[in-house]
Image 1 (cartoon, helix red, strand yellow):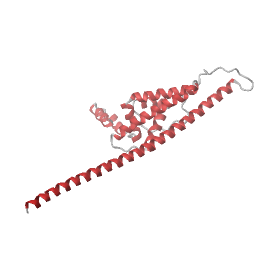
Image 2 (image 1 turned 135 degrees about the horizontal axis):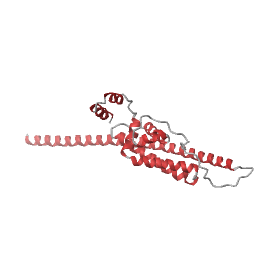
Image 3 (image 1 turned 135 degrees about the vertical axis):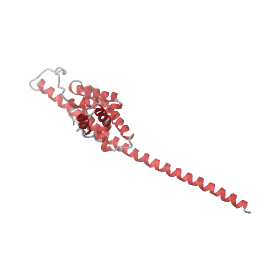
Image 4 (image 1 turned 120 degrees about the horizontal axis):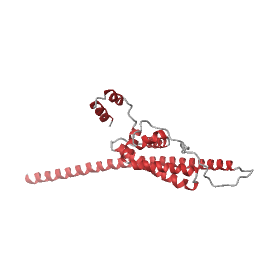
Amino acid sequence: MRDELVRTLRSAGQDSIAKAVKQLRKPTVAVWALNQAARNARGHVETFLSALDRVKRAQLRQPDDLAPASASMRAAVARIVSDARNALQATETAWTPSLLRRVSDTLRGAASDPAQRDQLLHGRLTDELPPPGFDVFGDVRATGKLRAVKPTKERPATNQRTERDDMMRRRAAELERETQEREREAARAEDEAHQARARLRELEARAKRARRKATEASQTSVKVARRSAKTR
């Protein structure tokens, strides 16, 4: 795509711009795979961004929705990571647990950065990004639409809201840790499955060679028997 753009710019007489584009740093394998996933299945990225926004709202105003919202976000991440893996494997590039982590981290980092969201959505990211950690609020701020509680001297309303915010942040941290652990487990399982498939292909190839040799030996035996019968 980059080379095609360079050719187009040169054909249009934009040599200086074409040169600048050609000198741009190529994205890493992880970024390339994520960009391909976004271009091939933009709806999956849109679903993920909507799920992330739902998690933000749940953290701030709807704690009962936090667990299902987080589950939806994890499912959306898994779909995009799978899309990225498929794009990469189509080029016969090995998919590793490290790549899974880098794609997932960049996906989360871009989604949590308002300046990178549009680049993510259109598959135009240029650099890998760190994960956002446990703070997925982004630039969202609490609106104060919390359940009304009568203030008391012992527990002022402000303190109650702070405690509630802290509780939701701790819960979000727990869900994030759970997500990361599940992704690590999925990476290990996928790596084991990849090794098993490779072993199966090797065994099938060996069986095929053995069958071919057995057929050749049988044919040779028949020929020898026929020649022996003719000489009697």
